[in-house]
Image (cartoon, rainbow, N blue to C red; front, side):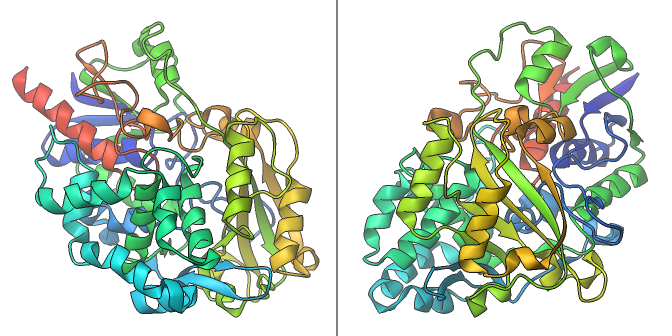
Length: 469
């Protein structure tokens, strides 16, 4: 009998399997798709030689993750590449605010009226980032805070809505960039703890950067799988699990799946009936005949580029997708251009680029024209560079990755109390009604992103149980 079986080879399932194998437990991992990866894959979606990331591409949380930083992933081929600028936010007038590694450079891009306010906001946390990120990405019951004072101070700033924090800034440039940071989790700007979201992304850029993985996000997953195999773990792909009886006998079962999929497989009935899924996204992967012709020079040097004319436009786009249940006319876009720093991603002189906008949950329309109109506002002539495109709305995203229910790439709404208390109100979020069954997907704390911390935290709960039996 195995000690543990893990279902789902996304970053969290892989991390949970690795953490258990490192502690001497026998582990087997089962994945429905033909390759490991989940939200961290790389495929030729458009033309031969153009390597795209179907979901995640830039990785500020991965490079800062306590789980990943504790693993020798570089031995298995993972190499982080840092663009000159982590992120840029261009404006219609051809200028841009930037999120640079340097706090001073970032502050200067906001203008003199807000430079000091920004420095005062981030400086108290910069030198305590590694401890802070470990504290807020771990549960109190799995690891006591190492710096409770800084964590409490962060909570005072981060728990209010981002619209409150934006009052610190007098001009629109800083407000717009910060609104874009908050919008990465597809939550309305006025939501609970949205200030924390923006602050986390800003601090991550200043301390560890927003890198891409050389060769694509698949390198993260392949490194985790390679380490797992070296530890003696088994990896089985093309193995769809429809019920617990499909799996070999084990002392524990760990699911990197959505809560609804787990309930269906394990026979938990309506245990997760109250779990809410959020808006979806419409994503386009592009093969380009050259770099994106951004008007703002800063955007040409950035790995990630946010697109939204001002904070009001960004807020309206988020409200349309999440509350009004309609596709926005001017979608807020998150775009990533990995080939500005990684020439292995496209043939010589060519580029890969992706963009996505928020749409209602399960939306079946086509946002291509609206996305490209937005891109043309800030990069005139963009359409002339397009060699091929691969589009994916909520139905296609859910078909590629069953965790993306209704196109929700966060595997659950990041709003209200569910921001912190997911998938249910519980002191033990990784446990389930069955004592031998656990959940470790991004539907559990600390939530979405490629960082492995739900898998890391869930593994602690699993090995504590295994040691007791």
